[in-house]
Image (cartoon, rainbow, N blue to C red; front, side, top):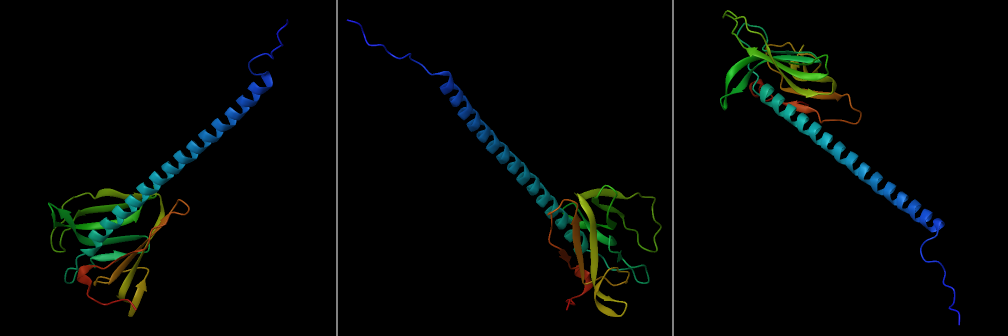
Amino acid sequence: MTEPAHPDSGFTLLEIMVVLVVFGLLSLALWTGIGVGTRGWRSGEQLSVSVQQAQDTEDVLRRVLTRADISDEGGAPSLTGEGDRLRAVSWLAQGGGYAHEAEIGLGVNAKKQLVLRWRTYVRTRCPRPDEAYQEEILISGLQGVDFSYFGMADGSMGWHKSWSSTSLPQLVRVHFHFIKAGQRWPDILIHPLLSGNAEPS
């Protein structure tokens, strides 16, 4: 008595090809998802760095401009500024306090960086030593910066695009123009402590 014929065991070539195609599609979807996740993580990391850099810059500007000093009697204005740059006399941190009075300057350089320059401040009647400015880069990636000044100048109380009065402005406003599209930071409003108590209308 003959035994019934059994079909050949194993997969056909067509079945193997289908499995390979399905496996390939699943692998592609998996790696694409991982790539998107990695790019998202990197973008988030870059954003975090930018936010931290902007916050650190704001902290420095507040420390410097809040402690801006008043002008010497009969001397030049201690704080002068245009829309894209500012010069002031201020107290810089030293040894846990503010015992170092310096002439400071702020502006964006050719490398699109906001730079703080400073050197020891010398009073009007004192000889100036031959001292070069020191520099610190505060933030990069700026198209520019706008400074504006609130106070009494040219017979009017309000916001001004430049400042050259011997009195300090009530407020200094700083606005960053970033190169990267969509990157923003709120305007920074700083009140110099020695400027008085007038409020903007």
